[in-house]
Length: 275
Length: 311
Image 1 (tube, rainbow over the protein chains, first blue to last red):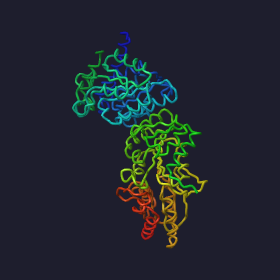
Image 2 (cartoon, rainbow over the protein chains, first blue to last red; image 1 turned 120 degrees about the horizontal axis):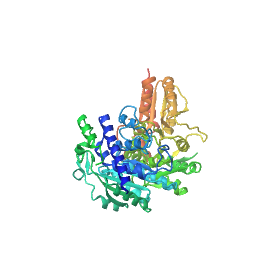
Image 3 (spheres, rainbow over the protein chains, first blue to last red; image 1 turned 120 degrees about the vertical axis):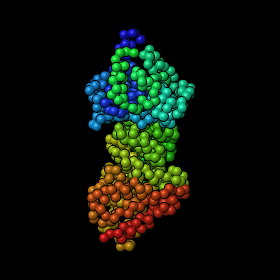
Image 4 (tube, each protein chain N blue to C red; image 1 turned 180 degrees about the horizontal axis):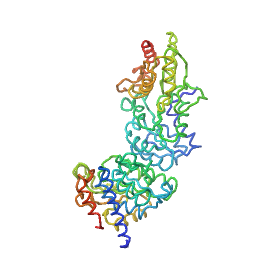
């Protein structure tokens, strides 16, 4: 990727990270850790990869994104706002009464949200249904599903993986945000899903392991996914939970905690320049 | 008159209406039993077997509906309403997607498979989901019409079908409408409000009550949600005593729905006839139903009880 484009994407990702902190700080609740870990991938998807048109959010030919780890919606909302689906001012209403920016994504009322999600394990199945519809209708759209590495402990996820491979959903690209942490601690201590590459391969996926914070890596993985015509692709994205805010990085407790005034100031000062 | 299980009518109706409507049907390795196979044989390209994975099937159905399709997802009531309850609520109910849940093998009349497969809780579960329509047809004629109504309704619908063959009790030109109850027999002493398999038994019970000089009305409520409150209240006032009858737990089903309606507007004694707070048992369907008194005799007893409570 050319440097100029990389800088552009990095600056959008920075805005998205700032928006994430703003939303969670204003709401005094929400999930900053897992939102920050997917900020770069969300940025790449919405600003480089996906074929979408914010002025026609229901376009039947558009690419779709299902945020199966729905609690990370501050990242999604920020991307949608920055992309122009709605005003960035609305981000201030996150998790507040009468806002369409619900605590977890609501497709009925939020422009640009392709599927309601939040109850872990269900989004990936819905993404399979959307991908299957694309195949049945002979449409060329692609479907992206972002899952957490804690989320994949849900049995339904593996039912969905079986389904995706069985029906050769090559238009489906699964991204597993492997930040290694979940609410009760490290995934490896709570419930290990490793060796994940082997499992995904055994379930019939094309697998790529990438650095979730490296745009060259992200680009090559999505290019690889797009070239695959016989099976679904799984991108295992090694990420840092809380990425970009030093005191949140790799700290379990920042899964679902809002920063106080002082922490907010510090986070925003750290997110002032491209790191 | 036709005699067939409502699951059979369901499978046939899917195949019939697929000619006019662009339906997609999902099943979880039970198409032989749920009778979606009848559809699958005619329209293989619109049938998707999801394997023994009901949770995934329900959310896949949501994804298809989110892409503009009218989708039926089928399995036994136990696994659709029971196992996949939370998927139904969050993947389908919350976004109000156009998915129809075709649940067969509901209630005790599953028979020999026993308690693990006899779902007496599905109406209670489904009725609590905002925006969910709950239909429990009484016979083959109504089952067919319920499928059509579900297709034409924009939003989630739960359809409850049985395994056991049942006699046709409704006329061929029967009018079915979501949210409407139908008075099959008029009466003034007590109204028997029945659903599904119990409607036929309620008609027999009304005949038996005549011998005892009790003039009973029989109302078919196949649309449990939305409930025809107007009709229920009318008969609460007119008869002053109600009996509800269902092949379902007395907790949370039609009986509860009727109690909720009358207690708020026109209270009268309501006796709930159904499966008491207990699990089922293995035996031939009719034997199990008799054991639990889910028959005309059971309804007669409850009706006399209801009449005795009148002031």
